[in-house]
Image 1 (tube, one colour):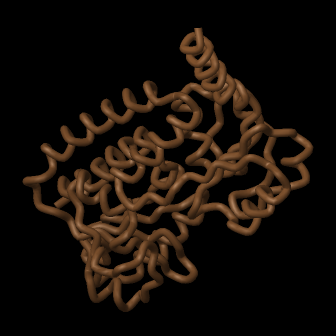
Image 2 (tube, one colour):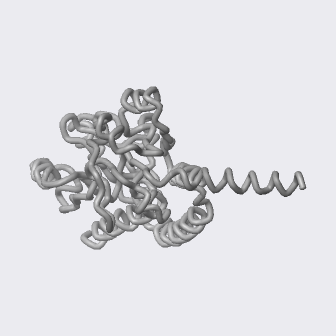
Image 3 (cartoon, one colour):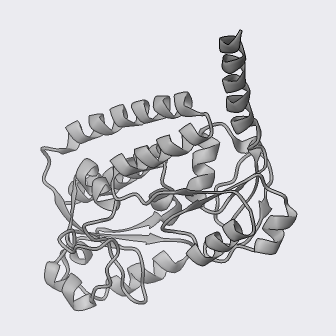
Length: 275
């Protein structure tokens, strides 16, 4: 009899852990995307600007770095999900001090990290089976893409992710895995940082074959116009300047990573065919 009661208690606790989380607030686009991929759109009651749009309308509670804590409290969430790197740490700590339940997703430096963080979140939400299926399918597709590109000539790529100051991708960023699988080589992958500031002169010296401008809105077009003045750069000379949407590159889930690899592969393939 005691064993039966123990088993029932475990089942009830497990059910309550999941059932409690039906008023979730997401503080980052990658979190919102993760929840939607796990089939939890209806449990999300609010998120931040630039989060992916789903079928259901959501309350906006501020930006990635400036969430409106008063509005968050008024919405009475049972769970808030943030990211270690993207969100304002002070704001997250304040929410915790106010008694709000906050889950913080870890930092990702590779595709492997992205899968692990996605898996951990899914396990926390009792969605482990769904996560494993997604991870398995995306891993299989990414390996197939790598088999296509690993023997091709690797284009030297400059990634611009910030304009003023000029910011690029270093050794510790997951973006290097886009290069690995899509057939490129980051000209600044030797810098032991995630997103280092660099100079225009250094880009000219490295002479990339391709320039990828990661941008939101019309900023990318302006940056491409600026680069076209430097005709000594191989990418400019051969018209291999491309604009990538930041939402495609930085919304970190296994599925969006796969999409970003496909996007990167497509532009690098265009560059090779233009030679």
